[in-house]
Length: 418
Image (tube, rainbow, N blue to C red):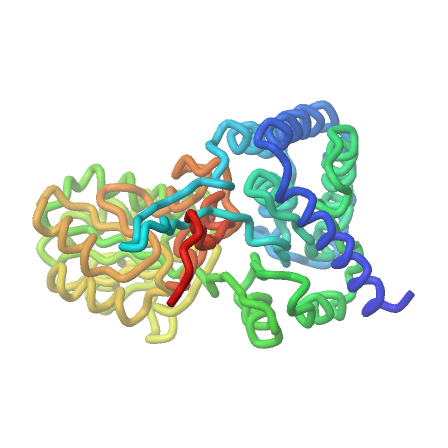
């Protein structure tokens, strides 16, 4: 069977699964999710054994530290993957929720009801945990999922899918609900993207190159963010100790993520006091600093930043720093260079905080919080399908509600249109 026929066959199986899971009860879905969580924990050693095959291949290929970090299934990450499924099971089922009802003059009642989207295609790189997160969110929201992970995680993903499908079968769930494309040829992606009318929406997760390729070639609606150029602005009215802790966490805690800070903006009124202190901590953490001229004068170890640096998503221990005149200059900088992912202001000034929340046009905007909290799990969504910087349908971390749409419903007693 050639790749085109293979992908079509898989997609049709998944489409049948979508019809079946849309009718499943909340109890059936929740039971399956809990059993899946238990199975993942029980088979942790098996998962790590398969993951080691991927890690060995990744090191041989010379993948970056950030990519290898994303690929690694530590015991803690397996626990988090399992807990994510349990958390999803504990959340309210959005399917069938009636959002609003109103009565018309002729007596009929019109409303909106949440329903599953249908079949969701996930195209992703590196992170094997996406396999479980995506499956859990799709299953709970009444959708089937067709997964196509990156070649660098093929052994890990196959092992996770095997565990999840075995549980689904035991729980009486249609096998097509969790469908995995195990062909690593990139043509498999191109064939998926042609299946308009079968796959209802595609969500790519990975580097900017993958996401742009998916967007440019897809005949199916795409929910995505291209990159995470996130900012923290340290205002003149900030608690500087808090600001230092937030900035350090946003850059260093896990630099290989899309919600890590890439540019730190500092009000000129506190730059001389704040920058030397934060620079010492960043230097100990081996962060390379690229700065504006004023930053370079204050931090001797910094190198001069170029214009294009401020557009970069480094996913590494590299940080841009710019001294700005005030909050307006900071928001102007964000408007120009941000990827509309996540921005934070550190300030004790209520009016400035509210201005920042209202005026900064990104998917997540925070006051006195690390950008690293821009995450479905941290938001209490159980997990996330990804982060969307689009403005239509879904924006920000995509949880259960973002994986549903609505349909109009009408109730009457024989009304006829004249």
